[in-house]
Length: 151
Image (cartoon, rainbow, N blue to C red):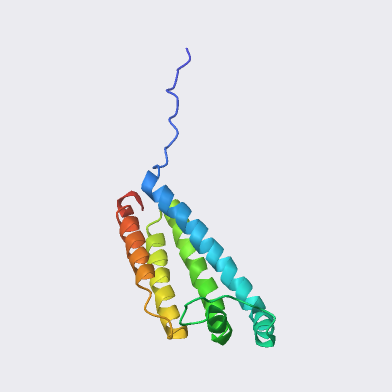
């Protein structure tokens, strides 16, 4: 006589809530592109500065009080490599949260706050980034609402 064993149920991974999916995808896009862009700027800032100083770049600034090209060429190149590293940390935090790991929230939150601090240290001529702070607080709050789904 053969015994019939019940079919083994595969263990289900908890599914990500839709809001967490959306937040992570937006973070992947924003932080990923920003990390790459800052790294490329870091690698090319010397050539860019030389073109600007030679007058080879003509850029319309309109009614701006601060010329963005002057701002880019005046900032210490370390700013761009730090930004690239911290954006990568933010991306990594989102990756961990995508995999429902709670520590990703801490990586992401700390990285986002460091980005605001870095910009204030290296770009003191710019006004305080209220919009960036508002977006950061909104994302951290929305991510925090999804902590109950993470381990």
